Length: 203
Image (cartoon, one colour):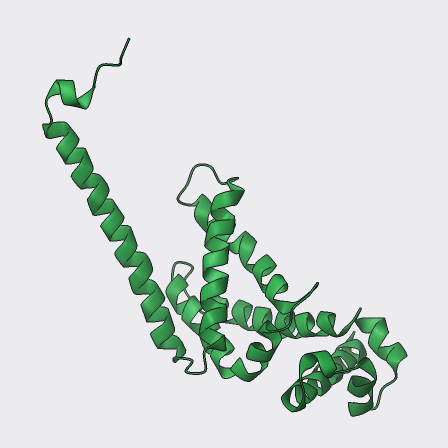
């Protein structure tokens, strides 16, 4: 296992170096192997293709980082965990910018969305009784993914603490506004005459 991880990390380092030098679609498996003095057989023993290697970098670096960060935080301190995750994206934004621009099957964009989907599904289930509503989960997953993607691809990429603050203000402000609007409608309905509360149906 140790030797396997050493090989994978060497291939990952080689790919990251090449991504700094040329567009991803121009990178060939032979170049990755040559950069770390390995053969193609070693590469394909561990990865299906270069897209698979990019996703492995995400899984190894980001997911491991997120798990370690969660260990020393209270279970309800989600915003701190989100900010730490965004700090990781920001510190590695040169890699993620290029990786997120990769299109096609098995791309990091698809992989990241697949990673977010079950997390958001669990969170939604804490608020909505119908936790099997795939439309709702897709809606919020798309919103979160697009926000992260737009932020990282922006040339003037704002610091992570500012990004998270803006997201927090939008979510909390929107929730408060909706709650107040619903209470206001409820109060108006209570004050209305009985005939207005329950309009008669046409025969």
